[in-house]
Length: 302
Length: 308
View 1 (cartoon, rainbow over the protein chains, first blue to last red):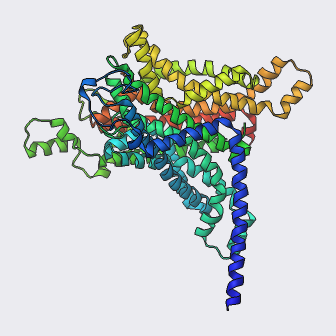
View 2 (cartoon, rainbow over the protein chains, first blue to last red):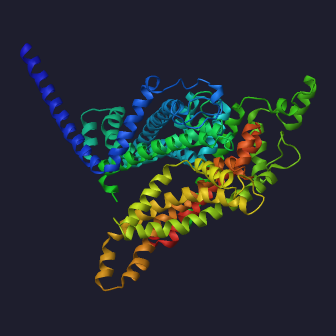
View 3 (cartoon, each protein chain N blue to C red):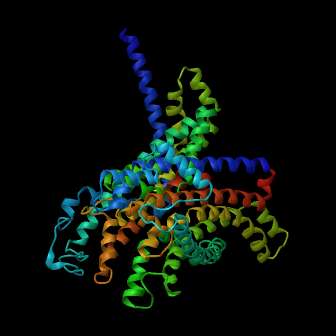
């Protein structure tokens, strides 16, 4: 008995090692291609820094983000307040640092929701085909024909502005492109031999979809997702700018721009820093996306 | 070809129907009672409230209300707003749509006439300083929120220099900032796209062949490369035009431009959901029609698609 157990455990571990090694070399190959595109490395460093800022904001920010300092209302940059103070005297640098939390939470959270829904819907539609495919595809068409920002504004107005609602509402509206992509990938994978082999060895639909098909369709999904994070961050800032995103007094780059707009005649400096913060963040995510596209999908290389 | 067209039209109509249904359901979930908003602080008896509800058909079940709305819509009647009475919604929307259209047509002409030559030139002179500079500019350009550029333009040209009005559409000067701000964003995206498409065409065999048979470089570039590179660009332009109207919401709000975007935003804030519904439907119809037109244009100019 002990003999048999020993053998089977050895077989399993050998298999596991082989799998780990092949994954390891694949990962290394992707990383090697990724870092050939220098701008993507710069983007990765910037986003890394942004993560550190977001996680350790209370330690890094020189002042509490909501601390009001009335005498310094609208003061320009100084030695104590590097980026100056806003219309009610809050430290702009501290609010920018705290605002990175909102941008990252919304950008990554909404993308995660959208990818989850999109991959599931796309895989289901592509795998089962027929009536299921028809219904799901019409749903995807409908969502893709909606004017996105108009839909987001309406939903935020209906459900009320809050951080959680912004993440959910954006996630629920931008998944259609993933569904379309995954569906097409699944259609081409469905008839391949390894799927037949999996079915012959007794795997059920769920296992085939999520263990065999989805992992093979994931490359392009990751590329699109990384390129979409930036536009979601811009969407969040636009919603907050219009007062239908993250509610005050939480520091979000969009609400800061909205403050800046109100006082643009007297204190134009308030509107400068949040815009630069958004641009740098979106730019970095886009550069990472370009790098990933080169690394994961050599067909799409320019 | 005809059956394809009919199929696309049927799908389009189905999509518009689904959008109208979804929009209507979302509107039903909206908090706040339009009749209460209409009455405001005035004192009214519950009977009077009921009478107002009955007059507007608000006491019917939602599917009857939906049916009334859709059947009026199908006849092109958008109704009148409960909140802002007097002006029919169709008139409100038409006026605003005209202003938005003017803004977008102007910015689109500027964007394409700059972006396409820049993209083609960057591709032909790949790895030159012009290529690096224009791609650096457009990579940053797509990352900047357009409404922030608007704010900065107001700071520089209105507040500091005093050359242009910060908002309004009263004179031609009011057009300059919003048109340029919208053009800037479009320009960045289109230049990147044109460059990518051109590079792809340049690596194809027929380009080598046309060079090998001794055609002048000018002929190779204009007749063979640019013409083929513009195919995908035209498609993407079509899809972008479809969505451009909803993209102007924030910019119109920044410049207080009396267009569709601002009407939409103001209506949301005023809880005037009838106007919101009307605009969403209009935008969706534009998207669907533009997508069909784009596909047809593509089939028309590219014989390879027609054969399939």
